[in-house]
Length: 288
Image 1 (cartoon, one colour):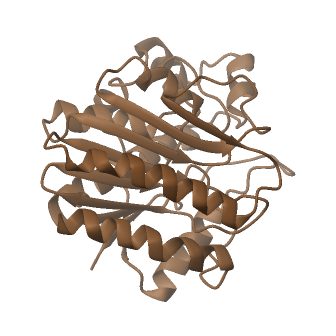
Image 2 (cartoon, rainbow, N blue to C red):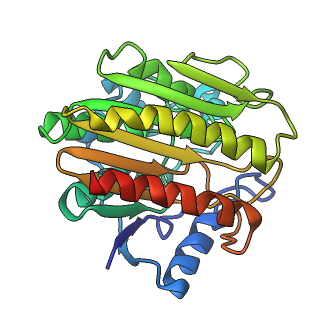
């Protein structure tokens, strides 16, 4: 059975009335378990050595020891606690574990992750550590992959990921995001598509397929490659959340949601529209 790595049991305290919907990760895990989509495995924690592949050692020390400044805590948007640090480690560890599973088994799932607002020396937007960059560099260090394609379809642009992978000649960042949404100071990716508010399913999916198919041609290159996919909702539509990883040979296809939705709605129009073309792309890649 496909393995799904979860970290929702590693919860952390939030003040009453805080806006972050922490319970959505548990809801997604429960839906996966109830529907028998995958076998859920507890995510391992990323080590300091893992995190230092992407993050400044002084920043990591401040996070681990609780010495973040008030300004840094405000930028992250979550109050510091030892539990928050452990949750961050597990989120990154889930991405690393799911990627390795994909390379070994052909498919793996991360039920969280996509913390694409974390920079090398700072956190932002509910993101303390950048799981995508850490996982990319961990697999590269281990000799498992080389080239990287990050396809980020979250409503928010992955500014932290762009800041670290932008100068990388073996990394390409393709983003389709909400143009009027956070972050308001963007870090350019290699290819940017900013959609206006109110974009409907048809326009969103058409652009997604056009860009994804074009960049999928990179799969034909014999070099090692990493693919990350993230999606979020457009005009409140419940596009499926989660992370799926496909692998063939030395190529890794990583599909990860930067933000989990409140509910998993497999009966929604967007789910039905997105799942078949995406599945066909994955099957074509695996069969090539």
